[in-house]
Image (cartoon, rainbow, N blue to C red; front, side, top):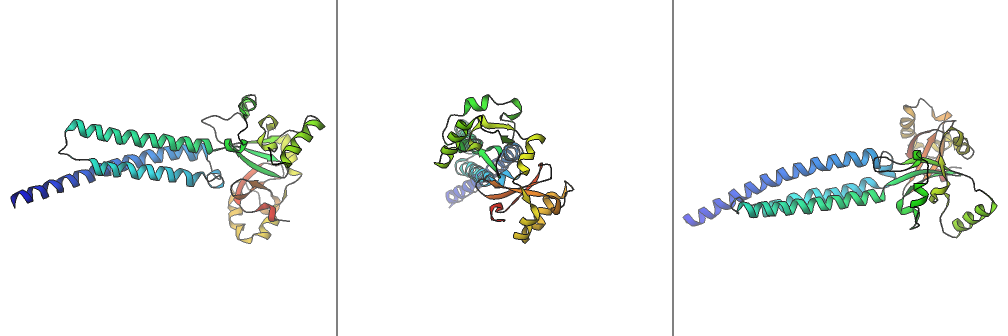
Length: 270
């Protein structure tokens, strides 16, 4: 009986100690996840790209698994009765596995992140590394002006596309696009700054935002909220569709400056 009580007491002590250790591990994991999340959503996936590109779901899925699995493993292996050297080795192994999973997850999110918001005739297209369809564009990206170059500490860059240099180049790009190949937005050697001079081109195909609101009345509140900080009203704004994994539109003023984004199918608006 005394032996049974001793075993029960030891198990209770071990479980309590393991719960405390796992709880501390969980809190540290959550803190690290929040810090990484602040960087990812503050730089790589600023609003609305976190929704538009699906980055939010991908990131939190990866982080959720990482944050939960590490503390669970600590709960299983932690034993205050275990030799200190063995316990440190076990916890260090868990920490190393968790950090490796975290780095892999962040790398995956980094590889999928949006690099450019490209104006392309009658739309904006969000372009990330996977959208280059396996073509080697490193040299084209490296040859861009410094203001258009992506790097680790920079979010998506808004760019325009230049006109074809000659009819031959125009025909080649058009033929490839029609046959399922790369379009202008997937060719970095066509990128140019989306500045005041270029924005006038976007205005040629932009449509009155009033039409979008009339087509989707439920979107009015979100549209007005997106315009609020700019001081532009719906009647004076324009829009262009945004192409990516979800259907969104970009809100523009009469000078072609982007004022915000809201979800919705811009191509459904006459």
